[in-house]
Image (cartoon, rainbow, N blue to C red; front, side):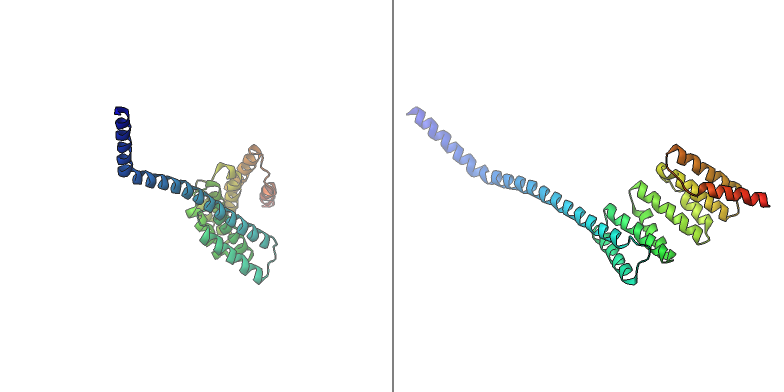
Length: 219
C-alpha cells in the first residue's frame, strides 16, 4: 500500500508539473519547429530569388548579344535591367545588369546614361572586382568626353590588382589626351609588364607605343 501511495503521489506530482509547465513546453516545441520551418522556407525563398535573377539576367544577355539592336530590343533590355535592379538589388546580377546597361548606352552614344549606370555600381557595390570594372569604364567614358583629368581621378581609386594592367593602359590613354607623351609611354610600358606578369594578353598597347615612337621620329 505504501508503494501504491508513493506511485500515486508521484503521478499526482507529474500531473501537477505538466499542468503548470506543459503549455509552455508545447509552445516552445512549436516555436522551435516553426523556426526550423521558417529558416528552411527562407533558404528556399532566397534560392528562388537567386534563380529568378539568374534567369532574367540570362535573358538580358541573350537579348543584347548583338551589336545592332532595334528599338524594340533596346526597350525590352531596359525593362529587364529595371526589373533586375528593382527586384534583385542586393545581388551580383543587379550590378552586372547595370554594367550591361552602360555598354548598351555607349553603343547608342548615350554617354550620360552610361555614366549614371556605372556610377551607381561604383558607389554601391561591395564587390571589389565589379566596382573596379565600373571605375575603369567610367575613366574610358571620361576620355571619350574630353575629360582626361576626370579619367585620371577615376583611375586613382583602389582598383583591384587583377585589373592593374587595364588600369595602366587607360592611364596611358588619358595622359596622351593631355598631351603628356612621356607619362603615356611609361603607363603603357607598365601595362605591358603587368600583363606579362599576370599572363593576361593586352592587345593594342604595343601598337600605341609604336605609334608614339613614330610620331616622335616624324617630329
